[in-house]
Structures are given as C-alpha cells and as structure tokens.
Length: 292
Length: 341
Image 1 (cartoon, rainbow over the protein chains, first blue to last red):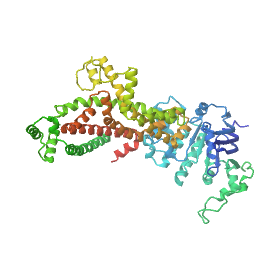
Image 2: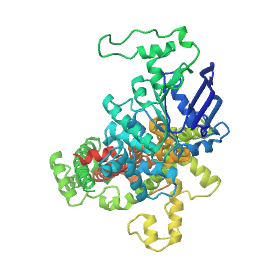
Image 3: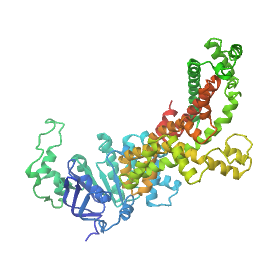
Image 4: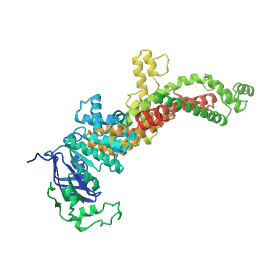
C-alpha cells in the first residue's frame, strides 16, 4: 500500500449560481496524483480544467455563488474541512502554481529579487534579504540562468518571456511544494522557448520529486511531460490512463477527435472534425497500467 | 543617481522656457484689459498731470516691447517693481503672502495623499462591500462640492456650532512671532514657542482640510478605480496562488501598481489647490497669495499681477517636477526609460 496520494479528488462537482439559475461546470471528477507523479489534464477551453486547479488551490472556495461538492484531499487532508486561512497556509508552501503568461504573472513594479524574497518568506518568514538572495540564486541556477545577479535586480519587463518563465518555474519550486499546478504553462511563449522551459521544468520536478498537475489543451506538450493523462470534456473525465497507452490507443470518441484535431505539417492542414457529438458523452474509459 | 540629476536639470531648463512664455503672455494680457493703472492707483481726484507723471515713471507711455524689456531687465535683477495696491515692492508682498499659502496648500496636499490614497485602497480591497459603497458615496459628495462650500460648512460645524477650531487667522492673536521664514509652523519652532506651533497648527487644520476635501475624494476615487483594475491582473492571481494574505496583497502587490496612474493626476490636483485656495483664504481671512492675487487683478496693479502669476506658475511647474520624480521612483519603466536617453 502506498502512502496517501499527494492529491486525491473524488466525485468533485462545481456549479455556479447566478441570477439566471445554476450552471454546472464539473460533473463528478475523480483524479489522483501520487508522489512524484506528473499527471496531465487535457481538454479544450471551457472544459473545466482551469477551475479544477483553482479548487485545488482553494481560491475558488471564496468566490460568491460557487458551490463545490465532492472530496478533495491533499496528502490525505480534507480541504472542505479547512478554514480560509488554513487553505491559505498551504498555498506557496505545499502548493504552488505556474501561469500561462509569465510576463504578466510577475508583478511589474517589483524586482525579481524582491518577488523571490516574498515567496521565500512564505516558507520561512524570518528569511533575511541576504539568505533570500543566496537561495534564489541557487534555484535560478537550477533553471539554467547564469547571470543571476542581473536577473534578480531586473524588473519583469526587462527580461524575455523565456527568462520570466524560468523565473516563475524557479519561484514555484523554491519552497519545495508537494504539488505543482501548471495551468497552460508557457502557452503565451513561442513554441521553441516553451519546449525549452518545459524541459527545464521536467528535470527540476524530477530532481525534487514534486508531483505535478499539468493542465493543457496541447496534446503534444502533454505527451512530452506527463506520465498519466486525464482527458476532460465538458466537466467530465472521458478517458484516463498512462500517456503511452492513450496515445497508442485512444478509445473514447472525444479523445480520438482531439488527437485528430492536431494539425499536421505534412499535408492535410487543419483537419475537419465535428464540434460536438453525442458520442463525446460516452462513459469514461480507463486504461490499464502501461506494459512495462 | 546621475540620471536623476540630469533629468531634473532637463526639467528645470524646460521650466525656465515655460516661465518665459508665461511672462510674455501675462505681460500682454495684463496690458490689454481696459483701464489705466495709473488712474486706478491715484483715484478719481488726481489731476491729469499727476496721472501723466505716474504713467511716465511706470514706462506706460513706451511701446509694449520696450516695457517688456524693462520688465525682463528688472526681473533678472530680482526686482518685480512696486505694487500700486500695497505701495511696496512686489517681491516683499510675495515673500509675505506666499509662505502662508504654501503652508495651507502643503498641508492640504498631505491630507489628499494620506487620507485619499488609503480610502481608495480600502474601497478597492472590499470592492462591492459596504465599506466600498460608503467610501464611494462620501467621496462623490466631497468631489462634487467646491472647496469654498466645504469651507463654509466646516466653519459652521466645527467653529461655530462646536467651537473646536478657530474661525480665522494663522495664530492666536496673543502670540506674536518674529517672521523669519514666514512659515508660521517653522517660525514658531525657531522662536522656541511650542504653544505657538500648536496654535498655528490648530489654525491651519480647518482651512487646509476644507481645501483638500475635493482632492481627497478625487484621489480616493482614482486609486479605487485603478486598483480594481489591477485586481483583475494575472500577477494578483499569482500573489493569491502563493497564499499572501488579502491585506498584504492590497497594501503591497496591488497598491503600488495602481498608484502609478493616480499619481500624475493627484499631482495636477495638488497644483490646482493654489488656485482653489483663493475662496478658502477669503473665508478664513488667511493672508495668502491667492487672496492677494485677486486683489491686485481687481486694481489692475500690473507689476503685482505679473509677479503673482509668475510665482504661481513657478510653484505649479515645480510641483509637476516633484510629481514626475515621484512617478519615476515608483515606476521602474519610466526610471529606465530616462536612463537610456
């Protein structure tokens, strides 16, 4: 028997109540991430993948009109039973998040060094500026930043998107979180830079044994990054299993459509697929363990 | 540091050019408005000869270019001429009246920033809540009534019905302080009179507050709207994802970025206080430059008009430079843009 999973979600539902009624966003999600595991959550925009990250983070609990049902456990602890401040305690220490566009996600009026120090003080409130600098330099080295001093003294607008992305990855991992949530990381960057930074991120989480929930609409990127994949469609998980197995043998009609939607450079261009189909609502398919 | 010095030097040079333009403009305007200054100064019973003699001494019979030449020559020697209204050198008048106004305006500016900005930040942090609504209603009230209305209301409430503050003047009449800087708060301290300092402060608070009220409202409303906008930015969600407390996010991560667009406007508002000071000075019998300025315009006191306008323009321009420097301090983009010039 393994330890309690880093993250275990069962029957998670989410609905928003507003003046026009109730709209259900998540229809019973089950998802587990074990220690050191990299899990991909793939789906189109509006499928509910980003709200799952916000629920795990605990920031959606405080939004008016949001009704969250089901069970979310972090390292065995039930999040529903936590107070607002207890959930806040987890963020930045045991949980951290990487955002889509690194340049707008960093504060424009503080230097990288200052922002690093703030994040470090989430983990160790007594950290001095000097110690903070040493620790930041260390982790920036791990994301292959060489001119650390210049970067720490810079403002985000003075760095390239790729640099900011490395900074954000380093910042997210500096407090050694149990779980890293990556919401479409680097989608705002160009493809080559995105590939480089994802490579760095993968090496880093491997070394640190960090579990990752990797959220993306891009199957190619997820294939490179994740050990296991969940495919989500309209708030339901439609197919789950080891990455290799799903790519070798997509069985759910929606997964097949998603894979067919990848444009090919060699002829064909953007493929024609149905926008919606009854078959996309077929029951969930679970793949067995990948053959060793 | 070097870049700041050169930026300031550059701005001061521009200021000199602007002042030169202002001097031409006000010099012409003052002379175009109808009425003979010599006749107004000497009164209706003066003889034609007397008036003519005065016009001669004031160079009023020369062409306007020659007159401007005289003015520039005197100005460079630090002489703004004699005021026909007070019969004293305009420089002496300004030295007497300007500090009183600056004292008023500086305290009003301090109120604007120290009350307006936090109010706006609180409203933004609790946007949509009762604190936000209360602050928005109150600030709308303060913005929509001019300073002199507030002055009258405040005098009625806090000097007349509840005599907490003095109605007029700069200091209690029994205290006499030797003028050194003519800033009452400073002079009382120089004289070592703590009671005088407190009395001067007591006299200053109500007029300064009346003058600042619409500015406080303006600053609060601007800060609120900028900060509400900042709250939708990804870097605030990032701060939330790192679990910083709402208080810390409001006071640090959201406040500073939202200050940048507000500060320029607040700076302009601050400079506008100089003009708004006129009615407030009248209501509180405050011996300031705004009241003096209006008096000399009504008297067509040419030297004093030009002198007062020049001083007020210079103060306005300097206030602008200070604001720009402050903006550069909090906005790294501007700081680095100036360096790379």
